[in-house]
Figure 1 (tube, rainbow, N blue to C red):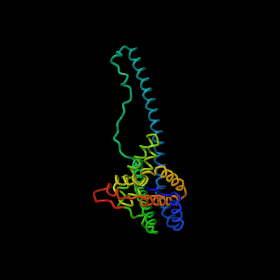
Figure 2: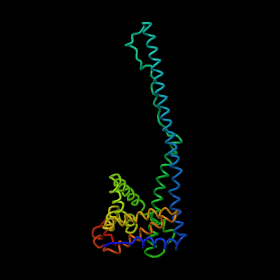
Figure 3: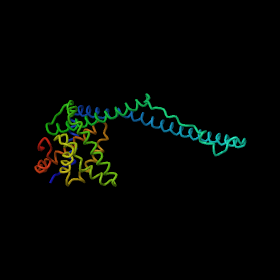
Figure 4: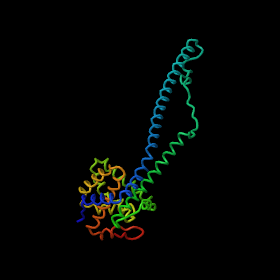
Length: 279
């Protein structure tokens, strides 16, 4: 039966990080700084949304007041005409006095272009963050398999970026839909697919195969994996090096589950266009 030790995983992770402190501090700092660049952009977008909402409310209020004003003028004019007897009420249209809206063609302003640029920058930062995340996993695998790695390895996973982005979208959808369905299914899916990204980086699988391989590795260890993920979340609070400790522990658990079980049936089941995936 596949099994792993949470204590061994974190012991090895902490020992590896503190033995190579400056490397992991550097990669952790870089991974932390890139997403933080999106904070001013988000603040700008939220500020614009608030200002736009206020302006919309003011326009609605002004429009209502203007319509009431013209209705009153129309009623006064109708009564004056009826008193003179020069025009019957049936031929008078109160709506004639209402202002007619003028439809102008829309042309993007400087603010519109700024918001579009913010959206593009946020999208690119998401890609860069994912790229660095895959690189961190590669470094973690290097230390487990070879006992060493280099800073430049963090930028070596560009070929996996697009499929990794699709994998992240599918993973997030699974988790969100699971939590919407009364939370418990979300926790189950989070534990079941906890090793989808390590499998993707390790074996360069396709999306379906990554989830399938993670399902096989997590089989029979859901509660233990849940406890491990809670520990990872707590450790990740540590500034800069927390994420590296968590990923190292994740790779250690991933390898332990591989080493304590036979993957022969997995190799036969997970087949894709390039051939049979090797363990």
